[in-house]
Each structure stands twice: as structure tokens, then as C-alpha cells.
Length: 309
Image (cartoon, rainbow, N blue to C red; front, side, top):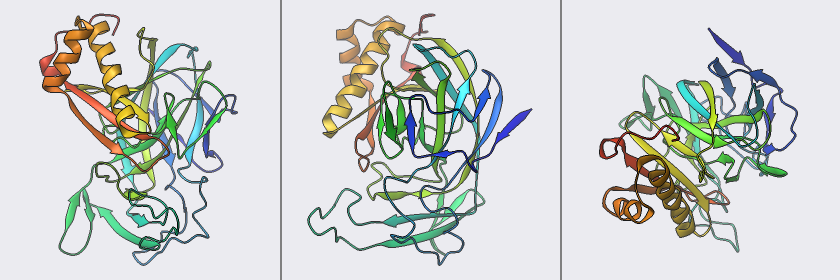
């Protein structure tokens, strides 16, 4: 049986230590959570809808539903979040917004002005126009736990997770986070029907309200894991978030070297060389305060992991 957690009255714009939890969930329990569209609930009602400064007020964007108290979660453990299903509204939008994206005119904040494109999302496709249909690739943009200290806005990210904007956070994947306070304080939101690598425009993903069905598990923390990890049946992946972009890449690769050495029997030097041969890596977004980089390794190239992985 799946339990529904509603978004209304439960939306937050920061992941925070000590935030009052909205509900308790148990490891193994199936949860369906409502996630609001990223910044203008109630505005996108037709294909002609437009966003405006009246309904986009950063940093109050990317609302996340939560936090959820995970029974049994203790500081220093790992929480594994497995996504089982995602169902979305029929209308989503993408937009250009001065000052956001990879080509910001920092002085005049001019660029192309505010532009909105609302699209129908149905039958497994994003209907770009009458001639172009794009297969949907639903994903969760914001997922994470309470940070080590204070609060981090949902437009930002870090070792606790947050606004990661990684396409691999999708149906069938398990994303793992280090727990920083008892109960974990899990947040989920900012879902996309489709996103290109880099998310080159600030609101470049197809933003859409979505229900996410998931479950969690708890386990001991691998010794050198400090950033989120993702695992599916076919690959393992590590994430890094930073500016400049090369530091995000270095973090993702560093974390993968540790994972291969600690769980798969590689020496650090061999893991480093191994990645030079087979790593699949890219920037998933460079429009948030810190950029996100992912490093993936196909499981087909790996031996069986040790029990400590």
C-alpha cells in the first residue's frame, strides 16, 4: 500500500537543520509525495500562460515538499532513496529569464527578456510544437536531507543534496545521502519532464508538477563517502557541486576513486587510471549557484562489490 503526502501547506524553500518535520515515514514504506511546479503554482493554466516578475521571486523558487522524518535514521548513517514511479501534470513550461542561464548579461540583465514556452506533456511526449515531439525523461531536480549546519535555499546544492538537477535521479534509481541529523529530514521537489545537459537556460528544464513514489532504506556510511551517490541496475555514479566547473568535476571523480577503492578492490592509483579509460561524465547543470557534475561507471566493468559498499 502506498501512502500519499500532500504538498499543500508542506512546501519549503530551504533545506534546514531543525526544521519541523511534516510526517514520519518508515524504511521500506511506499510513499507518494506531491511536488509543486518550480515557481508559479496556479499560473501555468493554458498553452498561452506567461510567467512574470509578479510570480517569480528568487530565492523563493523550487519548493520542496518536506521535511520527512525517517524512523530509525541516525546522524552519520546513509539514507538510500529509491524512485519507483513519477506521474506528472499535463502542462509544463520552460522560460528565459534575464540574469539566469549560461549567457547572463550581468550589467544590464537584458539578454532576450522574459520569454515563456508552455508545452503539453502527454502520452509519453513533450509536445514542443505540432511537428516536434520529445520523449519525456522525468527526473527529480531537488532531493536531499538537512545540511550539516543552518539552511541552504532550494535554489542551491551541496553535500546534503538540494538542487542537484541530475537526470539520473529518475524512476529505477537509488540516490544516497549522508544523514546529518537524526531523522534525516528528507525533502523532494522541483521535478522536470525533460532536461538537457547543462540546463543551459536558467529555467531551461521543462518544469512540471509531479507526484513521486519512492521508498527509503538505511545503512552504515562508507568511510569516504561525503557527497551523494546514485546507483541503478547498470551503473554507479558520484556527484560533485562547485564553482568553478572543474572543481565540481574533480569532486565527482575523487568520490568515484574512493568508491572503487573502498568497495571494489581497486587501489587509488588503479581507480584513477581506470576512470581515464571508461568514465562517463558530464555537467548536468551550470545555472545554479554551484554547478553539478556526474561521474558514472558501468557495472558491467566492475567486480562484485564488498559488503561494506
